[in-house]
Image (tube, rainbow, N blue to C red; front, top):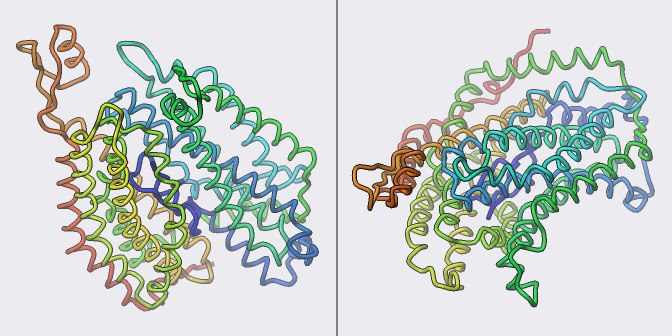
Length: 543
């Protein structure tokens, strides 16, 4: 139903709008800070050799439609792996995998939150004759295409597994982790290329291409795929005669996009040339070490360290609602394609909310909005738990009534108001405190920590659902249902496992309590950080 929330600030730019009954989790985002700093240098230094190699004018926007179209298409390609990875948990849930397995698979969504760790290398190491960005873009996209072709052959067997073990979660996680790692690396290369591919007067369109392209790619790989893969959806809306399968299978989808990746990458490698002059690789390699030292220097500052610790713990209270709710709805019988399609009518709201909220976060105390929205988002976790509890009570033979989806959509919309209020506020504070001398690297570090603050609680929340759940074996005396082996034995002996206490509800209550404790105690500490002088946030570097 949603784009993962960390996809919301993949690059520290306002683009990935979170669709937060988080199934991952959009959300998919750290722009390499040194690239943003490079952009600043390009625009401000009249003696910069790269600046002189970028065209000063290309007859306005029309003169660069080709470059803009290429950037847009590259970002669309980047969104496809993100969308596909986001759809896998829903497919797994329909196959009744454990939440422990879902927690293991959730590591797939970590690379976009960690790419700051290897982004300096992508920026500095390349083949000069081939091109600084193409040196990474071309092999990365070839590997993505080959991975898709490989998966098109293996994915059915990986998802089906065998009767005893079910889907092969370990292999699926390993393959899709590499898949997302490659997509994150491709994002670094494309972001960097955008700075020199477009002229100075049109470089602002790069962020638009990023926003539109990745959102479209995610939509194709997630929402559209889940709809066309569903036999029920296709039979109801797209066919005259019902069939057992959807119009598209996962294998077909992967094969098609694998071919698209290989063909388009070949065209880019042969046809598109990089025009910017390159400085000496030795100097840029030294810049890599300087970037890592700079990051360490920023983290050591007391105010930044305190802020980072707060960011890493702030989303614990939301983890059950964001990571588990969507999967629970699928478990209760809500079609996964219907949940995915509910994201479509939310797009206008997701566009308008940041524009409205930014008016209230533009002042000197943006975290006040974060603090005020915090309890409302926690209470939405309670509402989501009630929604999951209510779901089986309204299920009918033909599915769910229209008013049920209306309630889900309304709940989702209200939740988005709280999510965006917190997101816009925290991004405004990042911009406010970042040292302008090293603004790009500074912002990227804070955005990385923010993303990690959402990733690890989500993984933990998924992992804790099964241990907190209590089941009894009914119909087979002396048996229990504490593990998958015991559940299988209970079923083999003619019994069935009945859930007497769902760990999701226990976890939701614990998370809400922890969230309110954080709000009362640490939330005020975060607000007080706004009172620190600007000098407390400035990095002192000895050269």
